[in-house]
Image (cartoon, rainbow over all chains, first blue to last red; front, side, top):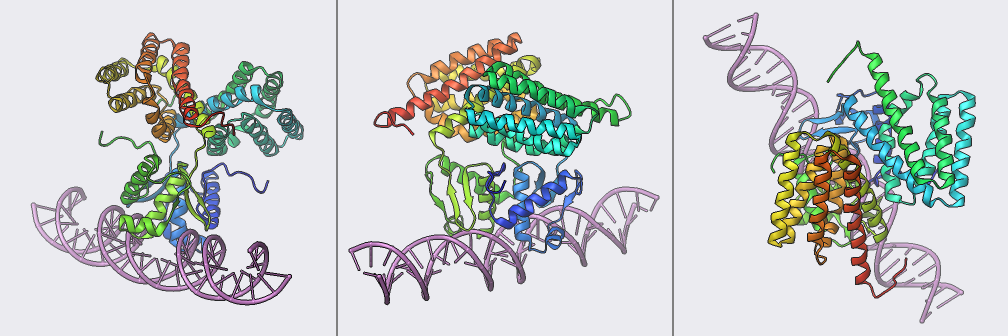
Length: 230
Length: 230
DNA sequence: TCAACGGTTTTTGTATACAAGATGGAAGAA
DNA sequence: TTCTTCCATCTTGTATACAAAAACCGTTGA
């Protein structure tokens, strides 16, 4: 858990990396809601550094799509509309499906062991009924599939997108019974991969992710008055 | 061709953007071969600016994966091994396949027209026998499919990856008869999309891209003495 | 009352200055 | 001769200074 490969692009410096991570969490956690202007001077004061490392962190955040830098206007937390979010889930589903297909064909015995271990951790978390424990174990489970794909570039892409969707997926897990259903879907995924059935693994993973997008959509819709068409 | 949506993440400033583009082209064009150290001071002298905008451009390049910034060590043009390149083509194939599948289902009549127009431009370029004209028209053709997918996030991802693979694809087109074969593959893709046959469009696009990865592999292998295993 | 104008102020973008870690080479010991 | 150590130098990372563009705000005129 220490020398892990960061899911993000190489970071310029140590402090810029730390800054970026804190800002990422704050944006995801709603400290800076969408549309918020991120003032360089204020951030510099907050972190007790000069504007230089702040700017560098902001550029990285912009590259990862979390904020938007409008020249001479400043940095703004990007509005991710429900439309775009669904699009992102759609792409995520495809990436994970691809990982699953390749993993079913290519995983070594070692990797199978790790996958099963992660799956069992999910089982324990499910029983404990703690959504955030499940969230953590779930992350390990999917990571096992990413790295098991044997395509490191694909794995990187999947990690980046997963991290961008993290706040929304987390929110999503609190939906009634979602943890239990998710775990059952994992069962099917593990079975397909262990069987080496690539088509089944692909389809199971695609469905597993797509359903999250749909559930999220339902969730958002339930918050609105009714019939909010775009 | 002027107010196009940049395939990259929002840029901090105008000059940083210009710097990034020049550096991108230089890296792709071999001015800075893989492994080259990009010295901030030298770059600053070359572009007659201070180190500040140079650093910001380098951070963006690192985010897009073209270079790697090792803290306190400097920026290095990233080595893209043949292994990684094949991985990238594999992912690209999947993204394009997805675009094709969605495009077959969702394209409007207008978008059909644009696709056919791009296809005809490819035909003219094929007849002219000018690989770089074909390269240009080919870009338009694929762009029509990206935007026709109706998933703007997917389209962005596809554009980013396409631009990263651009130098290698370009190189690849000079292989004997590749232009003609590529155009024939386009025929099949267009037919499938116009028919609304999503499965066929998906498969045709996947094959179209994968074959490029394979041809590239062949090409690289032919440059080496023989049997150069990793 | 409202809109247009102009000046002030704030904030970004760039340059420069400074601090600290990394590199490389010379000198000395085994 | 070769390896190690230390020091000079270079380069990155951060802070500060300055320039210019945008936002703000009060004033003026209709």
